[in-house]
Image (cartoon, rainbow, N blue to C red):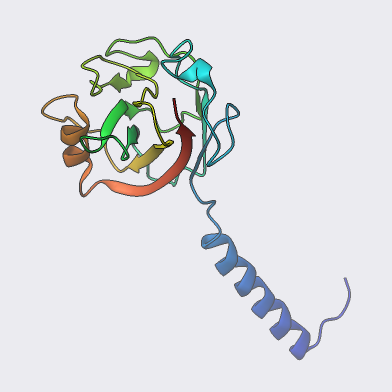
Length: 179
């Protein structure tokens, strides 16, 4: 083993402290992504009312330690009457790294996740379907929560109220669509 002088040990200790501090704060930023479209790009018809109206496959990464459940809200703030909710899912198990394309409608999902009611009045995903005109922006928001939630109803406002005080991190992806 090579000899390390007093000054060398000091440098080694400082380097170790810097590396330790960096690794503590180096938790990856939570992200939500899809291969169906690029961030800010148009959503393909397949995932809208102009096509098959399927939910796009989504992948999640960087979920923080201590997360007990995930929630997903997809909405359109450009809707004529105000924000229009297209999909609500909550109590997604924290180890979930993706949702497959074409999630079946209905409240119960694999692993105990629950789909809420969208503003079309249906349970599950309802794709973009704006009136003709300028493009609308569809926000896919993922939330990491410190506990599962029990909203009073499975609507976005009740899910968002139930999440208050429980959000550890959030991530967002936006796509556009126009008819």
